[in-house]
Amino acid sequence: MKLKDTPNPEQPKKQSDYWKNKKVYEKVQYQINNFFGPPLARIAVPQEIVDGLNKTVDRKLNEQYKTHGDRLVGQINHEPDLSLQDLDESGAAHFFHSCTASFVHQVLSTRFGGVENLKKNFQLSVLYKSAWAVCQYENEYNPVHFHTDCDISSVMYLKIPKYEKRWDDTRPYKQNWVDGCIEFIANSAGTMGLDMGTYQHTPQVGELFLFPSNLLHTVYPFLGKGERRSIAFNMSYQLRSLDKGVVVSGFNDPVGLGDGGMGASMIPKPIHDMVQSRKK
Image (cartoon, rainbow, N blue to C red; front, side):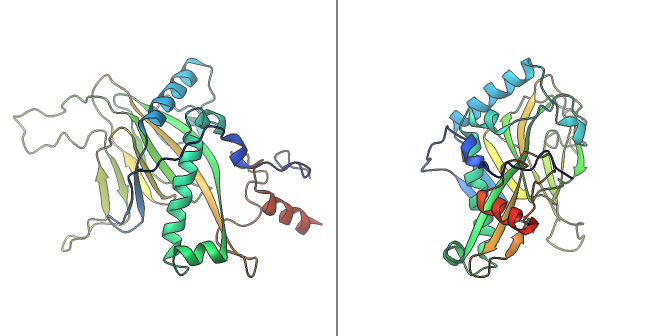
């Protein structure tokens, strides 16, 4: 059976071919935190990328766009698909990929003898699987969920509206700051200890979060007429031992073959050649 998404053996593509607009940013605020267990990277995205992504999403919303929302659990009306070409308009494709590769390197270095040993003895491949915009309006929300068919998930904020108060001063024990928050859920909270099991965050424009794709998270609704806009993308990674040639972490070799995802036709040439040789 021939899979239509199998790469052309004569001309395997690289995802890096799709980002033409890339810059080196020397002072990017980048932290990997363990607020509650799982690693969570928080990155400040340069303003020119934020502005460019907003222009790209505005353009998509004015077109007859392909929706990503049919595959998502979010109770949100507008979730246009984004391609690598869409992300590249602002330089975001290269920036996001670099941040994700750094995130994977740093997290895995604790298991494989440090960053330098990891770079010396292993080959890391990082692939986009999908990307989309989330244009959230009043009373829309994302229930608790996690992302499938990937290893790393993300959220990056483009617009945060001014929320209306849900509670007035006559009910001071009620909190207004929960509206529009994202909450990451690692485990159930203990009533007698310091481990809350979750991390709740009030987003700011330009923040990018990277996290393991199986980490549960939810987004709360808000009151008000503005738009809470974000970008989400999923990636997969593969760490291969240079000495033994075997995969030690991440996806197996046939990643993307026939899965219809963003990475289906853009498998790195060494992986593509190895898969084809095994088929023979």
